[in-house]
Image (cartoon, rainbow, N blue to C red):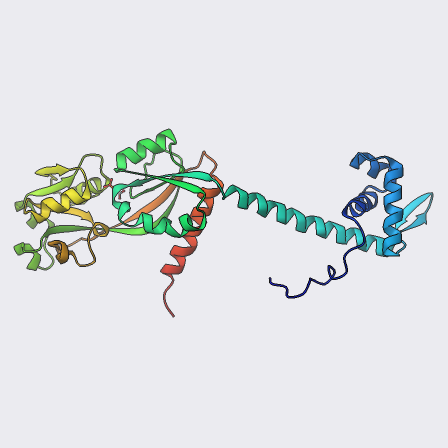
Length: 315
Ligand code: PGA
């Protein structure tokens, strides 16, 4: 909210001090000057004086006799309520201030499977720009190495397609990961439609290294159709696989995200194979038995907001 004039109530500088107001509220709440003084660690005459001065500067009668003691007047009750509301507003400020401090400096460790390196830096961009004091460490490894990092608790968050079931993990599926079969652009199969997977078995297959989630997903898809997965060559990165396919060494299954929007510009073609693309998802996961830091929670909120906005259909 933007004020062009002071908010009502602050226009006239309040003549009551916060210390007086705090003592007054304690007297009303605890039902006596003595009890309020003890709770506030002040001498009883000090509290009495504060209350008298408060009544004088406000020009209000705050207490009236009741039985052998004193009770707040109606306006006294109303003042006590106003002081409590001020307390709540102040607490809100202190909470926000602590949160903002927590995001000024710090470190956020994230593990990510290799395929996410094609887009994860872009997704982290707005958060990184908003919180320049948070140092982000992004460890990019294959699926098995990311699982090992999760077991050790090296990172707060991990991005992966196949979260392990033996760890207590919360997961949020945040992006689709379509897996496609690729061939050199000039390959004869590139002109065919709706190839059967079994028709590919005459071709040499290239694969990511053991431990790769992409490889595991491809292996499962082949096994589901009773086809043995017998790669002729294993290569340790998505780019190495693409180069080898382009060089005519074989076909491969890779995430669509590893390819240019038009794969032909890279000398590659996405084959039309029944059952493909394999519709998989990437998840952000974190351990349920650890408490997420403020930077990690803030990043999750930030991604949730932005990815949901992006996913919203246009009107
Ligand atoms: P990876 O990635 O092949 O680099 O292990 C798999 C995944 O997307 O989880």
